[in-house]
Length: 123
Image (cartoon, rainbow, N blue to C red; front, side, top):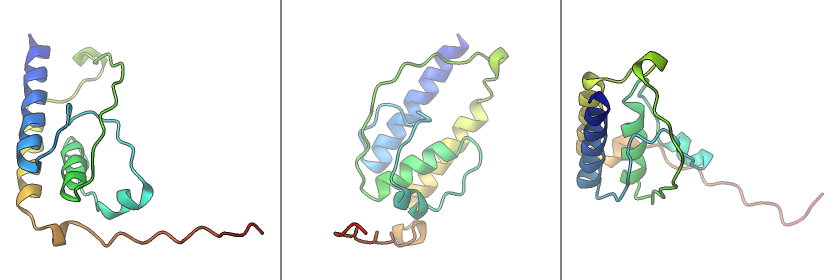
């Protein structure tokens, strides 16, 4: 029964993300995220617990970057195996989403550094 509540919580956070940021994602709390290095630097991440997932997703969507969902195989951990997330973490994730939606874009990001052009000549 507890896993049902986790699924409902995750679906709720994903729906909130889609509504707040006009995203089209399937799982906000996916954990696996691959981004170019300059984008990682621009995000100025501050989260250090379960708020890091919504922070990454919200900031990427605020930059109007497209998120591609790639299916993976996943076996969830039980509490005995170390699952530590709870209702308070879900509330914190939702609060992070709302805060980042209301915060101005200018205060969220550093300027993306232009990558140097690759050399046309090999030395």
